[in-house]
Length: 137
Image 1: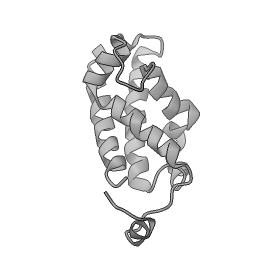
Image 2: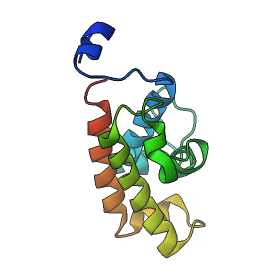
Image 3: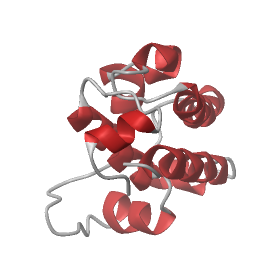
Image 4: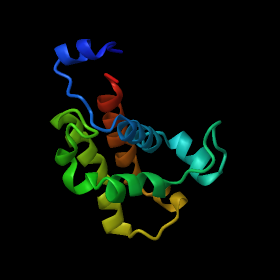
């Protein structure tokens, strides 16, 4: 982990306007990248300490509605994303989710989405995005 603000600046880091929202994005990407977590929490309502409730809808709303990352991730550089690479990996997660919603609609249960063959692509793209974005935080 990179230490001080000075060190980060010297490595070409941009300062993030809303670091709390960035942290929230990282948490949602982590959730989307972990099938075990999804089954445990979203399906079985067995939440880790500090989590009162969670479901797929929370991640989807953050990416598509709250932040509109699905249609304008580039616009979030310096806001919650550091660079174009981070925007690209978030766009890919959104693309994978969009493909599922286009094919199956938005009315299925979390369990039904997790059973879709295409769900593996969501997990894979979210893992990539999680690692790229959280790598230097």
